[in-house]
Length: 268
Image (cartoon, rainbow, N blue to C red; front, top):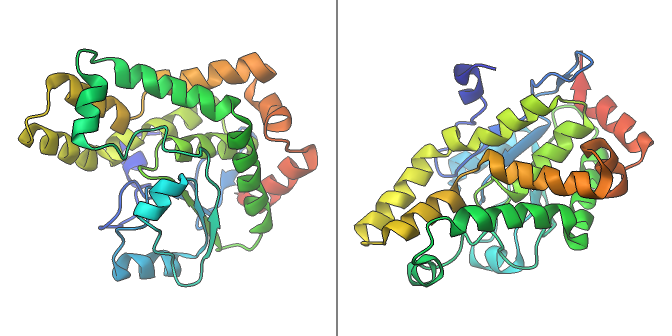
């Protein structure tokens, strides 16, 4: 997939971050994910009425919130008019550390510019290993299976739309038979689509005279990296051997579930 085509996956949302269409990706059997069926994004709290109307008219009928309770309390979703809100916290607190203050970040990261990178690898391990995360992702698939009508989209998100959301997209695409390289490409696309948001945050920290260590770590926390996904896949391998087996053993999806998902979400 070319960079130009990848960039077109970004939805024209002006008051939110990392809103993307998952339609169009080709499965290994030659089918494609339907458009207006699955969207991934960052948080919905900042959305203007214009953007909410856009998502409603686009077909958003489920809003799946993967954030922790504290994140939801701080910035509750603005839900598109005809969408049903579903709360499925992957973690019971914000392990991604997207909600820490500057002083907390300075205290955490001073003297270790690689802490953020290593921390994110642990977060990805936990998304695979923790029973609560598995249960939430299983429930995510229950919602996907319930949304069988063409043109009715399920939007799923966390705060930045890259980690908890990123793994939800990995699981979803794997369940549809999308190849690993395409899955990885979509995962890494956050770094392009969210670049303005990431750079704005780093510039804000520089203006506040944050240390170089803090800035390096915040870059790691606000970006995605092949190492993070590799940490998740390493735990998948330890638990189940491969991603297909993990969908069955870890997320408790049946062969019938996968067949139904492909009927609902794939087209020739």
